[in-house]
Image (cartoon, rainbow, N blue to C red; front, side, top):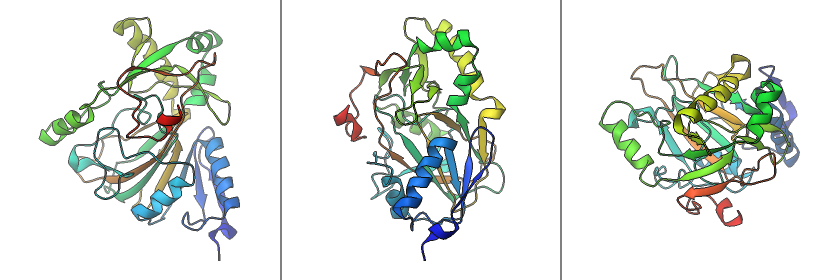
Length: 301
């Protein structure tokens, strides 16, 4: 019997997040998948408890949203699984900074899937923030200002805050072994919903035309709206859980609050398009290439 028969979407927060209950993502009809995709556009992040997927299962489910990216532009994939990135605290990977995945390239991933393998007994949650409601919260004067701005995103930025040990430092060297800088609109128009969202995060280094001091002050103002508590969803992991979020209109964060305990997730991302600003202009590369080795969207950009 198909898992669709008990399919339910339970809203978790007033502004972001829902849990999908009574479904096995390995056994979805086209109709049920279309419902999940629509729910993702509405709620921005969906949680699935106890899925107990393999890497192959996660890859197959993510691929229903579209062509997949590689694991990462610089960080090696899981052995034998070029689409899978291991987010492993024991390897110095602690993403304790607000970010949107891989926005330093011209075509960042559209959707991120995270699957829990090893979860600490406390802490280790994942937070996801709604950049669309953050934009709508801005006073009119700030919205109009943001609509005109562009920001430079780079992987050689403060986002990477490795553990203060040899593994952490080695990870940063790998992460920045090739450097990209890309100009994106500060306000991105979502390609499917048409919503406007603040497209700023830990990779955003500066505002085009302004110096670093001025840029950081402005970016901090916009970021403060993104991370307001009412815009943030928190997922408490159990092994086997799956989390899916829209990378085009969210940011996420993994608090480093689990001491030296192990925490390991596997990430698979879906290829995205070129961000478009309010005025219709598209993102452009400042330094680096189109990352064609990472995403099939590069060739279509």
